Image (cartoon, rainbow, N blue to C red; front, side, top):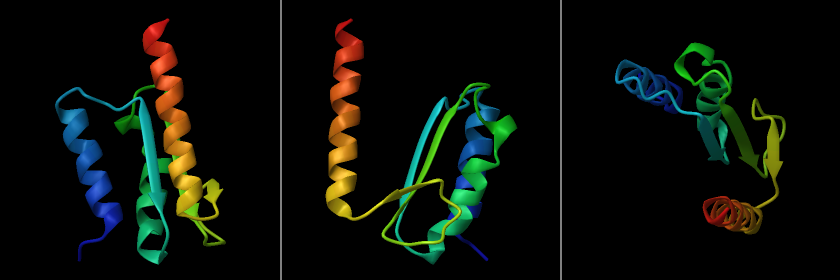
Length: 93
């Protein structure tokens, strides 16, 4: 009776209960068990900040409820490195 979707929903609810609604969510997965999680994060409007940026990425699997696709773990590493680089630039501004 537990899946990644239920865990994601509980996490978002707990954050909302503490008035800590996320404004950025990055969710990456590579198999069927991730689909429930993708569905929850893409449809959790009230649990998120009004202008929350939500990115659901599936890795090497199609079709998916995720909006974005990454080919493999190399793409994941490149994306995270890119986010880190942009984050550093924003902090320095």
